[in-house]
Length: 387
Image (cartoon, rainbow, N blue to C red):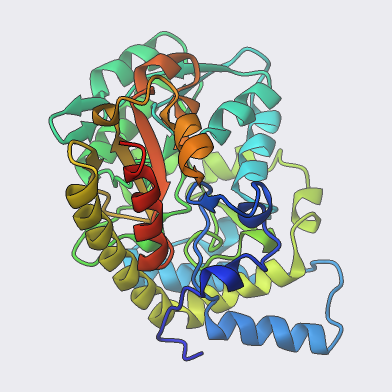
């Protein structure tokens, strides 16, 4: 496959895969839930993995300066962000990175601010580390969802120690502006809050849209921020288990010195070098993937408008996840469960992304459109048959 073309294999071929997406449910279910694309992996990544396997190069991960160098090159070219390569650490994945940061820097009961609706794993990470989530929900203003800066300041002033930021935001596919992030950074500096910015979906920001890394928002952001990220979402290599933790100041680097050294060795050799290839040689494929995702979005919107009138889709500007208000379908407070049981389509229940505020999101589902147009149409046709 050329490295400038993305391909979503046929449904029959996809069902031969071994990932959770294709094994969690029975074969009559069309999986549109987990954040995993169906596109074939970029050729440069395939090539480096094949070469390593052919050479039986499957040992433990040792020194790998190439990862920091490749990420810095990508960040400079894509976002004009001058990354300090000396402040890039390896982790198994972003979840492990977050958990290890909390273990090293928090004490049980510390408050962590989140913004619902948000990636459901956030709740698990906080429960695992015995921390208290403080929800400052995004504010819905017509078709837009906004950060509640006043609510953030109140939570920070009331003693929150951390802010776990999802940027770009899952499930909304929203990127926050430089002005918003700079305001967050000023508040974090004032109240001595550590911001952990999960930026794993950032490379998939659409053409014409601007993604601003938190750590590229000035001195306050540098003094208060940690980025956790990976190439795994944007290049579809989650099973390779490699991520990075990035800081931008001596103060935060000193905090991160408390992370266990073994975190590096628990990462994957294959994942690390796949990440190098993604950031260095996978950008042509990435741009084509973004084009395909945007085309899929337009196809999905058209199909929903024609077959599911009344369903409202929030427009993402990054990634392949969409947030649907399905209240017009009258499927009750667990629409995802009904869609799974009766339409045989797996989606993510909106309430799963709400934590203690689950009741606020019972009219929503999250739908993954990082697949073929045919699969999108099939899923929508199955849901439409419920009407």
